[in-house]
Image (tube, helix red, strand yellow):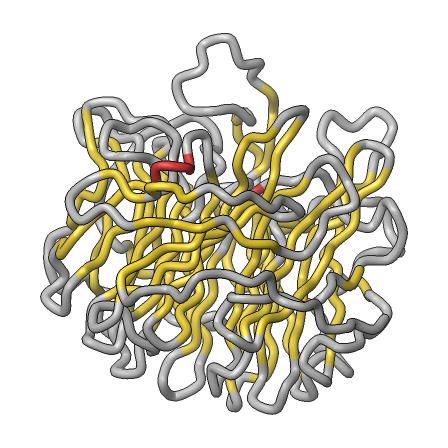
Length: 448
């Protein structure tokens, strides 16, 4: 699979404080106000890699360590067939290469699902890895089985290997392997982790949004976190290892590397009494017991489909963002944690209320010691994309909602110099479409 460069559309010079609104396969001449709140910014629609299908979603973003390239992946297609697509930008998102299909055939990736969307990670010498989930229909099974799929590029995304399956039980009866995370460091190599039904413990759970009284309750098992690693960036992989059990079965696991190269995981743990709180721990067999980020003590008899976001700065500070549905304290919270995962202060509510619908967030460290959070609820708890800048003290410095993002969900963020790229899945006629904003906030956002 190869990729050719695509000519950028001619556009006006971008001022220091600006956002550029991007929709896959859409070109428009309008100027949009994209932030709701103080200090409104303007956005200009520019051309992105074309989408050949009517639907797209599940964005993933990554930045090369030298900040020379931004990598972008998404899922496109419909019930007739879907594929994982990849594109790259060498000018901070101003223009993008023609897309390359990374997946193998029309059934190699499941329907868009933000908790199980593709994950991108980069190495130090132009390597790029993509990990995604493939759905497998099984007669008599209520929910599809799934497989963890992997492909790599050793030349910055210009060409890709044939995909392979990372879960090593693929020759037995199909099972669940999904809601995955991926990370890389010089010391740990390439690491993938996912939620796996092997050895799960039974409990009465259900797949639906919090607070839906019409949802059908089904028997479901807690998951285990399984992992595998590769010292040669995906050329060979270790045998699958079970690391943690009692995991909420459909809330994704997040991975981030420590300054010493060790890998850390964050996930939603199922505690006794149907309590579902966020924990962090080193991702290694025999590691210390997981550390609870905060004792929300949220009791919920099912899985809410909302895992945590985790990022670790160069100084070892951990930035954690999560959703809790705890009555009278529901919402999305941020906290800074030390190298052991212990919170260094009280959680900061980003969007809170007595009852708040489930939300999904991502976080990236900033050079000033703060962080940039993107979440899919506005200040009133409606579905939209909101950006929150956290200062070095762990407090909210500013927060704005993207005006053009109503109905948007599952945001992803990449930071390149003084530019932040924010991608999400938004509603579109007949389905969904991946959208992106390029936000230049000179002097406030900076490369990690």
